Image (cartoon, rainbow, N blue to C red; front, side):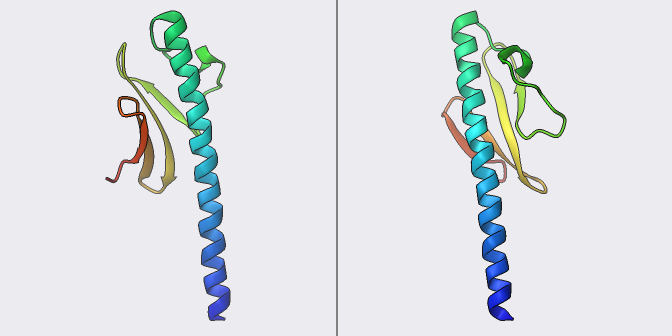
Length: 97
């Protein structure tokens, strides 16, 4: 019984990690499109649909243009926690840090 509980925990962790990896990979693709759009047009897109991505309320990736030079890309990890892309440092970080 103890083995089954441990196996279940390991499987859940692997599944969640796989989902997170997919979200981060999608986020990286979106970031590249945003940066290419900015180079080509001289400004950030107002919405993801300007770079060919359909924005959905349920995500999985969210984009917010803060001003003419900065933006936020993020995705949920779980209840109350997100991974946020810091475009200045060009890296992802948890919003719980």
